[in-house]
Image (cartoon, rainbow, N blue to C red; front, side, top):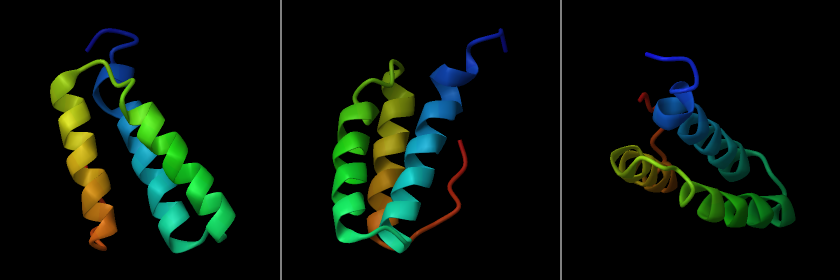
Length: 71
């Protein structure tokens, strides 16, 4: 993997999933709302379609109580 490619594969999606997990489990209602809005916006900036699709699937899995996703 070339330098800088980690962002295209895992860094951003993992950060978004970590934020969503925190928001779902620990955040106040106001913070949760802000986090979810930011996640919805930022997930659309993932440049790789396949990675974005996996991230969206995993983010929805968090709604179902699933945890510990890997890319």
